[in-house]
Length: 531
Image 1: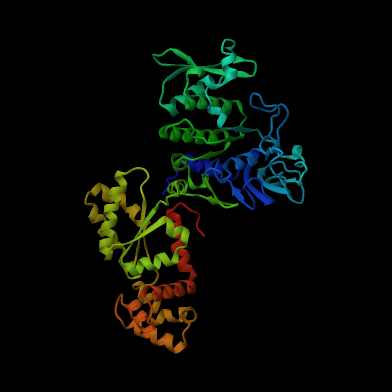
Image 2: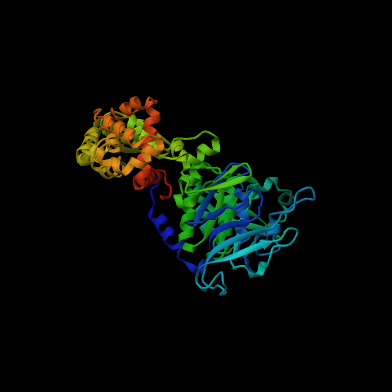
């Protein structure tokens, strides 16, 4: 489960509230299709959003759509070599004569802004409002200059190409001359030093025309230029130079943010960007294939795009493990759910939908005491593996609810170490929950008290008369603890699992708040939004 830092909390606080930054809140493809995107809605809930997905899932398309949300003043900041200080759809969506032209398209942007022109779409001058970009088939996109103004920078993968591989840089290598420092060079040097754990003693640019070449020195080493930098090193100096050149509140778009960086550097990069977003109120949207990038961001900052045929599905708040499994094609289990027996396992698996079942493993351990001792062993394992551990939770039978304190004591005894016991109290309390009812789960489903709640669904699901249902449930309730499903199956001459599934489904559909409680519990451990 993601642990929110104080910096995360600060960023989550300002991001949805500061109307002075023209924050991009939502992109929605209302009609038509642009590349593989149609009928999708993408929400941004944190200053840094990482969009993951397999190749061809339209990640870069989302960056392009984000770039086209805003306009800018003619004298606003622009990257070297760009004609305009803003982006248009023609910067990104280009067709040759062999390719089909874009049809009718409507794209809705929701923006948090403090200077709206009052219209039917935006009745208030301050707050969330919307703008719609429209293009008719064969026509042009409408009214670029009516867009909300904001500085936007798009950094594609070409940014990591080192100077030694750039023909222009090689042609001008003898013409680069010292330029005037801007005052932010030391800040960039210190930031890149922290990210790469390297002691840079100087950083500046040499310039020729619209081109520039970084020059650095390390402690006890000679000066060297961008011609002798690694791709990741060069991209970091360029990224943080651009960030320092942009005004506060800018939107920075980065394609494949992790390129050229090892995992520790990726972690440090995200931490530095979080600080910048909190201090200068930037919004950063990036694409990634890196599990480490996702791990460093809260669920609010993660989006996964999944392409199924011609459809693209947006999965917000995805866990890093789930994303990694999807990217690799091998589904990763993210959560172990410990239960007492096979009946409890069947109940949990019946309540969860296919997506949640694929991300969890339900493990029947034995008695409640055995479950809690096993949880103690899992705690020790998790504490020794600081990263990428599978989460764990416990669902004991309902008759154990009155013994919750005793069960927690069993868990603490399994730890033995007094220091561990003290530290683990909150941990176990958050992970211990119970199945419905005040008795074992089979009894909750078939006993006379519950029968009134579930009766009509039993009849419909099992296609039985009232008398036959009464006979089955009466017999099952007299069968003894944990024998209820077996007895019901014997009377119906069905497979025990089939009958049990019918009974469980009927019970939980009759009391939907219980299934919702269990689903929300599991979603919470998976880092997902509850329902």
